Every structure is written in structure tokens, then in C-alpha cells.
Length: 299
Image 1 (cartoon, rainbow, N blue to C red):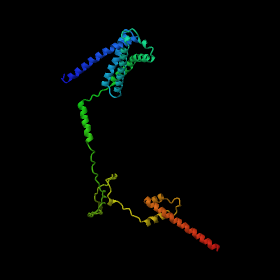
Image 2 (cartoon, helix red, strand yellow):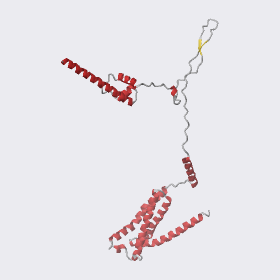
Image 3 (cartoon, rainbow, N blue to C red):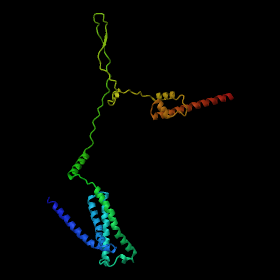
Image 4 (cartoon, helix red, strand yellow):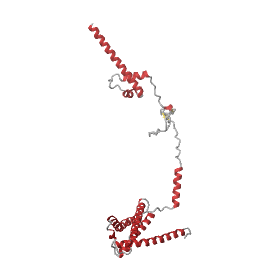
């Protein structure tokens, strides 16, 4: 046995001695209270073990359990400690209880205090059965953490090391140019041999072209892209006039023009306004012409 453990053992022994003496002092008061409640000698002898014994069980449970179970054990320990303190106080406040000559009926002139104390004293055994069984079940089903301190410290160091690592630098993306087209088969003329065999033309062997589709090899360079011709405003307007020549006024919208001419939304709105203005001007010209014809006909 290591010498380091000796102080702990002495401390535990001293604590057990103090708790034993305190139980003996409280046992006298609880025994007299039980006798005053009408219990026989055997029941009164066991009554202190019910109250103070559950306190000891709850204390052990607080050292074993964790989380919500530990909080429950602390509440049971505090509740039964307070109940034992109240009963010891009542025993000291009523000297007649010491000689067991009178019962708690002497407090009948104070109904509130009488019934409260009787309820407290008689409910402690029932509570001991309920809470004691629950704490024992929780202790039996409790699974302690079996990891040693060295394992925990090693795991903590590993977690810290992992957290200190920064994000891995992504590999640079290499842009691969578009593969060139395979060369066309080369026709080679072979001289005709002497004899009846006619001259033949053979093809030079070339690499067989794979029918499997090629995957994406990267970004297509700007030089390999088909340039899109840039149209002037007049060209856009001309295309829009041809496209909308047979459209009604309701069909003449910026979205329809944008899709038909394939231009931006801003330019499509400008083309719509221009075409509408041209249609309004044409309508006004027709109206003026009709009015002038009608005036000449009247004259």
C-alpha cells in the first residue's frame, strides 16, 4: 500500500466515527418521537435507521451518480436531513417526550402544528421506501466511465492537435487544353508488282479512335471558343421589327423580344419602347390621312 493513501484512509475512518456518533445522538430523539406516535419498541428502534439510514444511502449515491440522478440524490439527502433536524428540534422542545409519558396529543390545541408534525413523521418511512428503491436502482444501472486518466489526457491532446490543424491547402487546378483532332488516314500508293496483280492502295495504320465519350478536361481556352458577333443598335432594331411584324400590341413585351432577339433585358426594354412608339406614330399618321380624306370628300 502506498504511503500516499494513508491520509485518505485516516480521513475516511475519522468521518465514519463522527457520523456514527452523530447517528447515536439523533437516534435517541427519533426513537422517542416514534414511541410518541404509537409505535412498539421494535418499530421505534428501527425508525432512526429509516430516516438517518436513507441519508447515508443518498450521500453514497451522490458520489456514484452523475447528471440528473446526482441532483435527485442531493435533493433526497437535503430533504431527509431537514426532516431529521425538525424531529430533533421537536424532541428537544417538548421535554415530556423524553420520558414517553405523553404523546403528541399535547399539541392538539395547536391543530396546524400537530397535524404537520404527525404527517412529517409518518411520511418519512414511506418516502424511504420510494426514494431508497429508486436510488438503489439507479446505482445498479449506472455505468461508470472506465477510461483512465492517462487515456483521457491522451484523448484531450489529440483533440487539441486536431483543432490546431488548419484547413488543408487545396491542390491547384491544372487547366488542360482541348485535345487536338486525330490526323486523317494517310493514303500511300504502292507500286504495282509485275504480273497480273492490279495495283492496290493501302492505308497507313493509324491509331483507332475510341468511341467512348471524353470527360471534361478543364476550362476551354478563349482562343478555342466561337466568338459571338456583336450587333449594333440598328441591327437589333431591324431584327426586332422583322420578328414582331405580325405581333399584336399585347404580345409586344420586353421578355418576348429578349428571347426572340437573344439580347439583354435592358436592350429588350429599349426595343419594346421604340417599336411601340413607331406603332403609335403609324396609327396617328393613318388617322390624320383618314381625316384629310374625309375633309376633301365633304368639300
